[in-house]
Structures are given as C-alpha cells and as structure tokens.
Image 1 (spheres, rainbow, N blue to C red):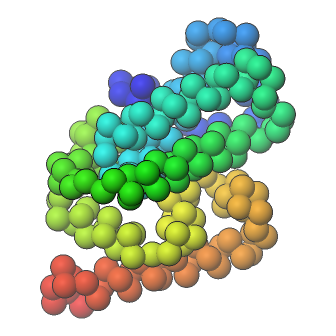
Image 2: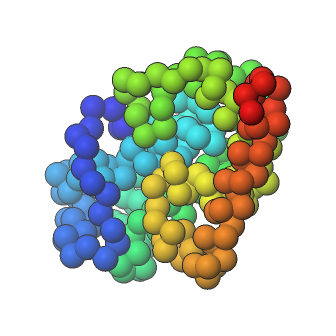
Length: 200
C-alpha cells in the first residue's frame, strides 16, 4: 500500500479539492481511493513504523486504518468536515497505541534490519547507519508517551502544529513549548548515551 507511490504534496484539511475526493471515495470510486492513499498512506506508514519498528506491522496498521476510513466514509461515519487529516491520524494513533500495547504484552526480539528504512521512505532508497538509527529509536523510547507522541506526529506524520494542537486539544503555545522541550530532552538523551562516545 505504501510502496511505489508518486510523491504528492500533503493537502491541508482546508483545501477545497479534498471534499470531492472524499465524496467520490465514499461512493466507491477507485481513483479517489488511490488519491487518498497517495496523499496520506506514506505518512501513516511512517508514523506506525516509527512506533512499532516493524515494516510488516506498519503495513498492517496502514491497511487497517484505510479500511476503517473506507467503512466510515461509506457508512456516513465521517462528520468532521474540513478536518479529515486530523480525523485520519486520530484513527491511526489509536490503532498504533492498541498494537503497541499488544506487542508489549507479547514482546518479541526486533530484527535490526527493520531499522534500515528512513521514515517517509518506505522503499528504502536512502539507508542510514543502522547503529545511529538504533540510538535514535532507543532515545525516543526513553521519552514519556506525551513527548514521543508530539515528536512523532510532527516529524513522522508530518502534521502541522495547528493540526496537532487541535488533535490533542491543546493551545498552540502549549504545544510549541511541549515540542521544544521534547526535542531538548531527546537531544540530552542522545548526548548522554554511551553511543555518543566522546562526541561533545
């Protein structure tokens, strides 16, 4: 679902062209569905991969999210007109949290090779140093859930601060301060980790 997609700029919820796409998708138009998946599939996948660290689970979550969206659109369950992106990522975050809780209860070793792809690049054309990516993942794990969530929504889901503030029900100033603090904490964790070596 996330591979082989053309790059399409994300459409903000206020863009006029999204309403007819949603209406057509709700009516079963395959072209409209492909358009929605091209617009948002990569970002849902990147968010899921960031949290779950497994390509197979990220793919499964992405497909599950779009299946839920399809059912809700078809059945008239989408009533947040003009806020589709926030609605979509709320569904995605709920599904990711459920899966994270489930996999925590049944913890299994993670294949280090699963870190090989850059978030937002499911094809894996650019492969970072696995040890560096592993250190970043470990540092993210040390953040509290609230700090990690705001970083993931901003940097993996590529949501605007306005959208994140609306989704989390926080004033913009509070959210910006939280994001700044979360990044500071992440940097401090990275700099204090043994992997930082003597890099000061």
